Image (cartoon, rainbow, N blue to C red; front, top):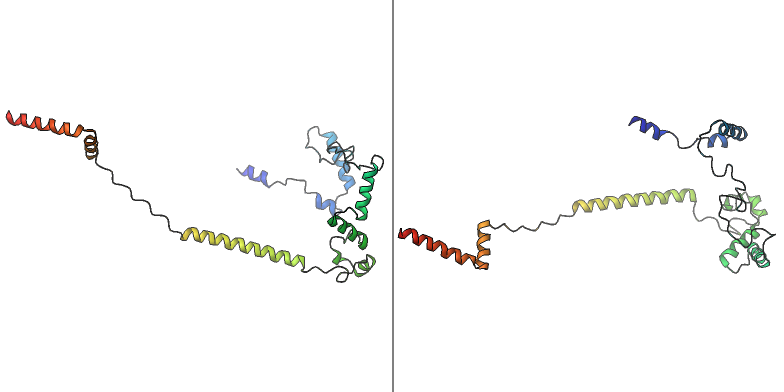
Length: 219
């Protein structure tokens, strides 16, 4: 049992991510040593899919991707209509308002990718350059997301807890249905007598008993 617990406590991954992120481990050294281990050890776990997959970031030439016959895979193979559709998408003229609105906004703003999802975090100079002044060209967030999200999560947790408590209280307070009274079992003799009366056997047995008693008295 203890051995199973110890096995469960072992990390499921190498836990090297923070060491790579903060520069404690050289990616080049890590990759070199990893290849060395692969050569020395015949049996080892399979590397991640992308580690040795050619063209991993592309569909064409990628062995793990489904090859879908897209109309516009590259400029060399695309037909004229596909080129027109791609150009319409880039210009925000697809005819679908929700797509065109997004593309138009991106073109007008010229906001750096770093701030495109949270433009209110961009410095004032960046907002001016992108022609998107928060509070003027685009509204400020109606709430502070970092605070509002925690508050809403707390409210949901409280609601679930209260609902669970009410459910348990109702279950405890609800009286159980009274069991239906069971009919008293009739004695076997009375039950047999009733059966005999219905079938006609009772009268015959009574005549037999009277005849037996009369015979005993005569003797």
